[in-house]
Image 1 (cartoon, rainbow, N blue to C red):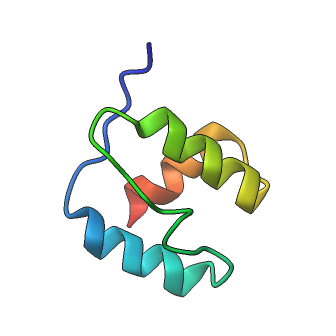
Image 2: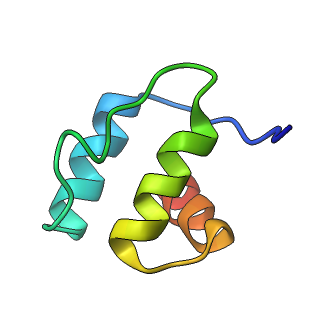
Image 3: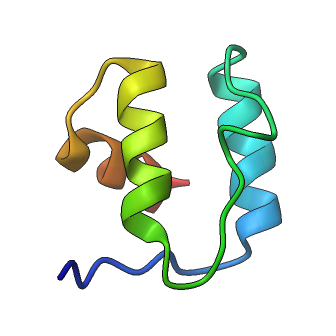
Length: 61
């Protein structure tokens, strides 16, 4: 079980991620509470980054 939680306004973070990584789509960034691992997996695959790198990107925004 992963205890990583996305904090803050997800819609705001999603917009900033789309600006920085133009290849991301709304489907890539679809998020539901409790499904952080699924979202991180999608972003890892799409961005070619590790899970830790993706978590850091989201946390910085």
